[in-house]
Length: 342
Image (tube, rainbow, N blue to C red; front, side):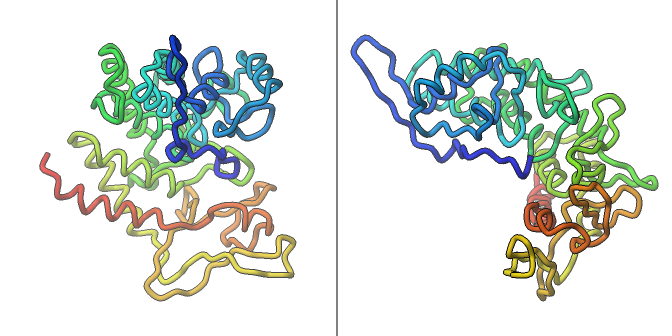
């Protein structure tokens, strides 16, 4: 999740092609991606418990290890995993014509389709289901990343027009089911629709806990991503209701004339601290809000909820994004959405 981001910003990596007479053109990064693809189609975030870095030459021992780990059940959609590999392979195929890259991307898409729950949600990990890995996960755009791939397949965008027509039908069903899940999981408090939690129990669709400091709560970062996605969809009264409620919630819960900043502080164990300071004209939102009073919520590694950031340990204060401008993105997109001709 947020703390365990992978190093690989695939969209910024260059393509390295080589060509030998009688052989297919190859891309070094795509070759590494195929090496680490699990035999059921997905990708892990790690190679031998280390963050994946596709943009380098793998050693012979790493290649051997990758083959040995093909059957590990640790594939995930967390931190852009699997979705970024699929997108890279699609682009590598378009540039090289190498069928192995297309087959790898198709296998990854098949994995995503298989991982979707009947209720429309996606787990953070599949097929591993221990701890919070089986929960329906909006955290860090996990489910939204998958839905955007399905959306590109349906629209023949961003290179996905190379897929066979059958994928478009499957992707449309996945989108329809996924949006239904999103609408069902919008949290209602005191009879009013609000925003979304970061993760949900896959059975009862109630907000669920992930790591100790990620309590069941309203999650602004994830809700911002969800609202932006919903605003891209065709008109329906249910979508309009969800969007209007979410935008209204962001407007009602903004923190005005405040900004979260990282400062030097030699007294703290980390040598720094994160504090909320006065700043005229600034607007921010807390990362989490509780499910009763809808007030900012903070927790450290002990999992105890607090009302102020200063109440949790320094390591968590400086090591997590507790405040952000997520509502600004919502407001900007909402103004454009209101002008759409449905």
